[in-house]
Amino acid sequence: MKFILMTVLITMISCNLRKEDNFTDNDNIDVIDLKNDKSLLVKKDYYGTYSFSNWNDFNISNIRLHEIESLDFNTSITRMNLLSESILGMDESIPDWLKTNKALKEIKEIEEKFSILVDQRYSSTTKIRKNWKNLSNEFDDLREELKETVEENQS
Image 1 (spheres, rainbow, N blue to C red):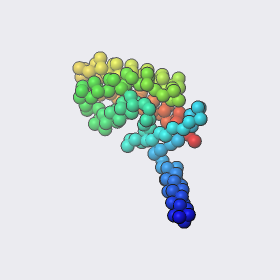
Image 2: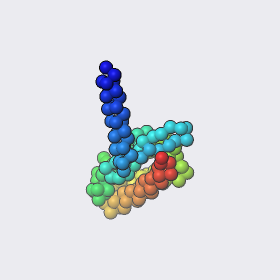
Image 3: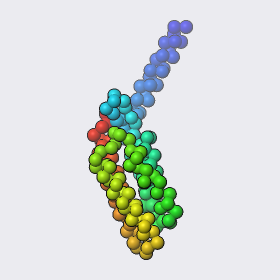
Image 4: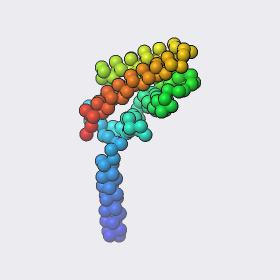
C-alpha cells in the first residue's frame, strides 16, 4: 500500500514539475505580479499581441482591427458598427494594473479616431481607408504601451 501511495505522489509531483517547465518556456504566456501579491497570466494572441482575460473590450477591438488590417482596410460599415461597443467601452473596463496615464491617453485618441471614422463612413473609399489606417496606428500605440506595461510587471 505504501508503495502505491508513494508511486502516485511521485507521479503527481513529476507531472506538476513538467507542467511548470512547459509553462515557463512558453513565449506566448507571461506571469504578471500585481501589487496585491496576486499573479495574473497574460497571453499573446495569434497576431503576437497581448490579450487579457479580464479586458474583453480590448481583446475584441484588437482582433477585429487585426482582421480589418489584413483586409487592407477594405471592409464594410457593419464591421465598423461591430467595433463601436468594444472601442467605446475600453476606458471603462481597463484593468487597474494596465491603467497608466499613457494607456488612458491612447484610448482617448482611439475613441477620437473612431468617432472621425464613424462620422465620415459615407465619404470616399480613399478617405475611409485613411481613417481606418489612422485608427489602426493609434491602436498600435496602445498595443505598444500595454506591451511595455506587461514587460514592467513580468515575474
